[in-house]
Length: 381
Image (cartoon, rainbow, N blue to C red; front, side, top):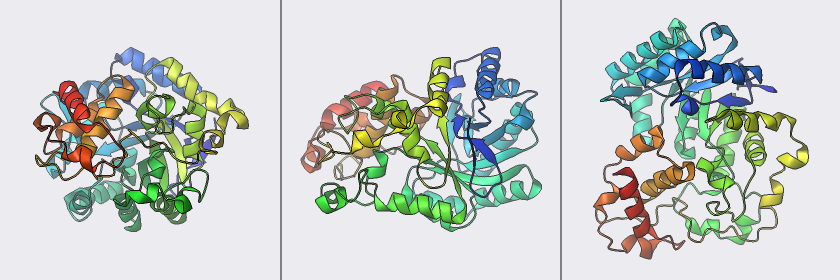
């Protein structure tokens, strides 16, 4: 296992790290076995976003006796209400959930206190200018969290957070497909030859700027969605029309500036072995250029790029977000807890679609949006 500096935190993290999704259906004993398997491969870094009391209890048992050997990333603003995970900005709920996390993990400190899931500018200001950030700074002063982090999928908002100087770790979604998506609604940039041919991976400038800013400011990045929710591993779902291997996806993410680790879901021991096998892969097996190079055009036709051109919907549905959550669920063959709850947070849902077709007329990629809304309504209820 190779260990990397996580920005300027002083933490040395395994570049293959452990998400908590794969523990959701396991018993306490099974969780401990899975954790010890990961540690036997050299994994020393794991993320704990989940708020389920049972999962937290199981993870507490899994790390018992190993606390000093692990770097734990625990999330603020992830709470448990009405028997389900929810994101919250209510400071009393934030405090209560954090104390519950500490108690169930049986630890007196968290290495990284990760402020959970900020994608909107309004939400950014609510958190950074309000009691949530005050609480995070209070916990850091007390030594109960060693470093403050934030998770996001939006490069513009992530850049704003990094520029405050308040966060030391960014949990961000990085993969070849996401890195091609523009930060604005100027979708023509996706097709412009002078932009497309700029480099073999056509990385969008705003994302490049974010990664380079993190490198410059010593903000470490740990990566989520390195496989695009599984899309990049499936030829039919991949927007490239070609599949990437696990090794290629990992290598792509690890070669971005400031990246310290890739978080893996590890839903089985085989998943775990497949990811840690990256450490022994040849340079040829890691090389993702052979997938991206030679493509005169990126194949966007029929694939939602979440550009927002489908708006406005007369019923107020955020079509791009609904489609994103649908695609994530389809790719994984189930509805993950986070996807379900993020879908619920939307102001309007797929079952409100009246099939007027205005979104399909606006879509530059020929996506069958009405069919997607029907599928999402059936899948999410």
